[in-house]
Amino acid sequence: MTKIPYKIYIQEKDMPKAWLNVKAFMKEQHAPFLNPATLKPCTKDDLRPVFCDAVIDQELNTTDKLIEIPDGIREFYHMYRPSPLCRAYFLEKALDTPAHIYYKFEGNNTSGSHKLNSAIAQVYYAKEQGITSLTTETGAGQWGTALSMACAFYGVDLKVYMVKVSAQQKPYRREVMRTYGAEVIASPSDTTEVGRKILAEHPDTGGSLGCAISEAVETAVKTPNCRYVLGSVLDHVLLHQSVIGLESKTALDMYGVTPDIVIGCCGGGSNFGGLIAPFMADRLEGKNNITFVGVEPASCPSLTRGRYAYDFCDTGRMTPLAKMYTLGSDFIPSPNHAGGLRYHGMSPVVSKLYHDGYITARSVTQTEVFRAAELFARTEGTFPAPESSHAIAAAIDEALKCKESGESKDILFGLTGTGYFDMAAYKSFNDGTMTDYIPTDEDLKHGFDSLPKVD
Image (cartoon, rainbow, N blue to C red; front, top):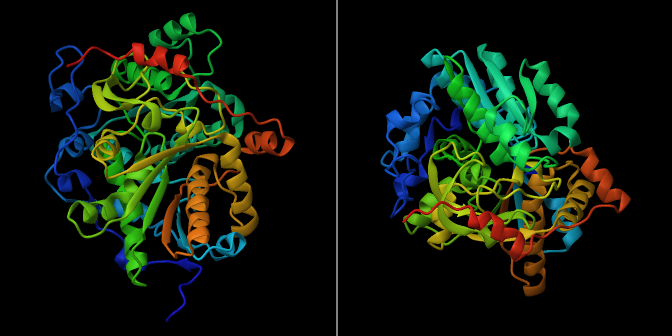
């Protein structure tokens, strides 16, 4: 049998020419987004003041299994794609496990993460529509960085609302965005009505993605020829990220491997949804029995402890209502170091698949995550982002179960990016000052009490 290489690169000619729309494979669609004023399903006209027309069409598309990737986007992808699928031989040896561990590495671009896959698509469509400026939010900074790169490439102005605690922890990530031409504002800020309201109610808050979304949406709506773009959660973002899963499947198919377990970190659901897309499509058609595992921080446990309900996607309650697993739009997570995984809700697609039993979920504490990151860095040589390390922790757990049982399984996880801007987090771990915060039921109650009353 041919030994599987340490790194598998598919050929450029085999790169995806179309994204995979997992919704077209689902037996039942997730509940529609609702207009908060009428509580009726959102139409394209409802969404036009906020989003670009092309992505609205993708958001509402439930029938096309494949959606063509425009040539302009595919040409940009060639700058950094295909990304490598790696066999974690050294980690396997350190764990003394019979499991085979693979990871799809999305950190081989300047943004340092998978976020560029959707950023370039959304800016491309904005440019095609004649939009001159965009707004967005960013948590850990990967999305803001990716979008800054894409906007610089196409000559579109960008304003980024960065979660305040992340802006404080990762000032150099902010400088990368500014170098690419973006204006970066720590959120919540006094530059918007909703920001001032949040600061009045929570003057010491470190912010949240929900807060930053509110500010970005308000600015987009009030600015001429401007639109808002989102880096996770929404269906069209998961669609763009399916390039991750499609490349992974093509690479594994070259060696006749079908994973037994697919693992991804979960904040809003974009990288996880993109990684699992083609494997989930096959699962929905009865072609495999893969176990899908979404891993989230114990401090922001939307899947494992949230409620499946309609909720606002932002703290300021300006966005449409989405049915998803949520901790409530008023939930403000603790300022942990997994900045990209601090969103109160989960992708409606991922939520529906989880609710229907196709996905499992688990939560892990910060110290568990960084122990896994340390082992991975020391064995595999790649310095992982805290977000990615949630998936690493779960992959290690599954590999150790194989060691106990003597069963060999093929495990695939998503390594979404690198951790070089997360040195404050690693310093805290190395110094032994890192703490674990797990919200109590009483802590969660405040968020749940904020859920809108929708039948």
